Image (cartoon, rainbow, N blue to C red; front, side, top):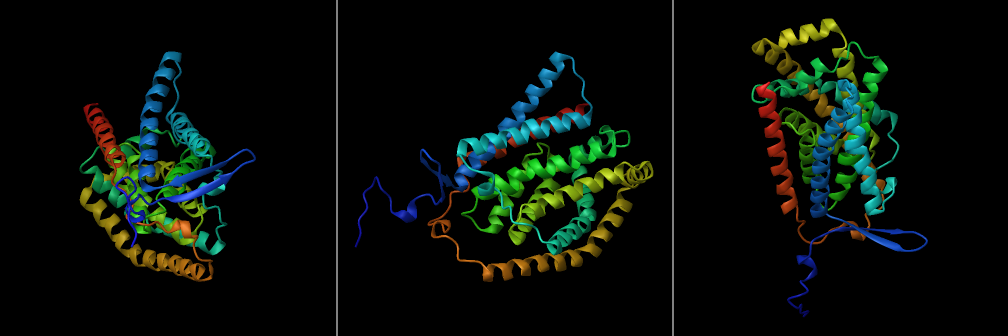
Length: 337
């Protein structure tokens, strides 16, 4: 029989973590990953995003600099996501391969995830439309003000296609995904998907971006390659750029948007038609994952967390509260215009 003092709870009662030991010539650093720490990382990122947006706006106004929508978006991606990611690597003393799953993406899996991305487009527009019935249609306003038709194609693809698929995936299928290694893939997908939606800081994009985030997490899990969700993100955003650069498509889309019954019929019908195809493609990725798991070595003992992970900590609830306040403020401001 073993006894424990009040000051030292039994191992099962301690917060489960995944330990990563890093070495350098002068010292050894032990970095602990956990869901509780992941919540704090997300809180830091959300606050950083909000503060950096305010600082950028004040600085540009003080300098008398007027940037177009694409330039503002590029600045927000670099300053609001890439810079804090570099801070994260520096503070945690991790290298990129220890945060990202950099396994090559096979041509077959690349084709499958591309087809999945194309197949879910009707569902994305359906969710987008349904969300606009309740919340301010942020996406439509962005598309109208982005000036896609006038900007060079390569600039639009760089800012809307390349940068988000890199910098947003570094966080949500990279750093944060790793932080929740101690929980099941279902919980990990839901939490990182929730945070991915929150990162957009408005209720309209929160809904469909959150669903995208859940799907991207499963795609990463099935392929074991960060390049899979990056490819999906790039294809989805780039297709939007190409479609909305066409004046005929844009006018037809907004005309269809103005007829709710017809829009729901078209988007809903295409979504229903594509659903069985998407199920088949996802099963194909799942089967590939299962075959790889059979041939892979067993996980390291430290990866099996003991006890119940602490997911719903104070930082988690504070993230939700900050998002609700900031997104609510954005909703009221936009509707007042």
